[in-house]
Image 1 (cartoon, rainbow, N blue to C red):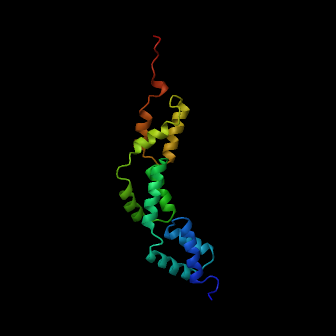
Image 2: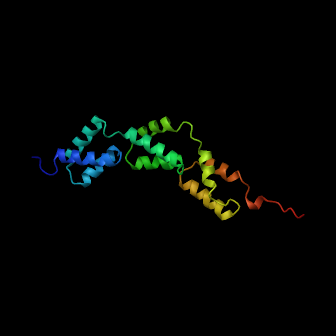
Image 3: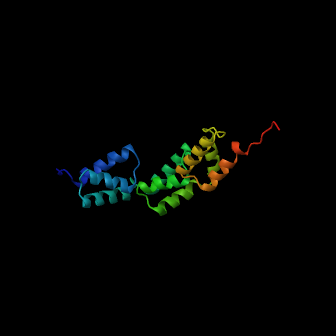
Length: 160
């Protein structure tokens, strides 16, 4: 019978984690280490799971990108940052990004977000611009979105 902290225990625990949610290699590694499995055991188990195809960073990146685009709330910079935070390397992110984002219309997504704000109010306009910036939309997209509807300062008096 295997002792606690064995490869078999670590492997079964990792499979339980992966049954709940697709995780990156680094996420599985960190969760096993937090569970006090030894570094050698963790490395062996993670390598075995990668070889089996149970862990696949490219799959995780593609699914995360697709989900983020479906929700249409985040821009490209934030999506990339979230993937990097999950431990996925830049080359994998780039490859997954080019697979799934070829025809993304960031301007249309930003325009849809803008609809939630009263663009006649200068404070709401500024709030919308800050939100788009925090969500990682390119500044060029933000400028176009903010320019599509004139601000109240540009309105002329019609009573003259």
